[in-house]
Image 1 (cartoon, rainbow, N blue to C red):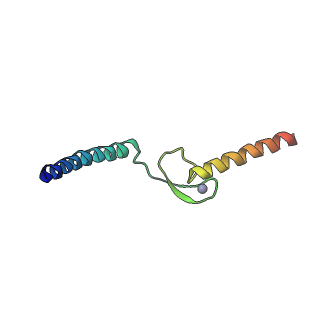
Image 2: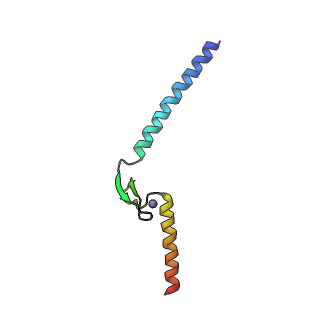
Image 3: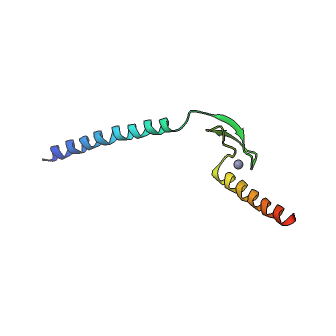
Length: 80
Ligand SMILES: [Zn+2]
């Protein structure tokens, strides 16, 4: 009886492993293989971009730059 339980767990492990491998393959296929050395437009930090349009090292910098630009636009609008 305990023997069959052990083989059942072993079979479960066999089922889990290939599924993980497939997910990993999918993930590497989904992301691009591009590595473009760039400098962040917000903080000036050097980073590696995965797409040609990336301007910022992180989401945070992109958001901060976006907010700063929005604020500048508002200031410009009040000045004119
Ligand atoms: Zn940055």
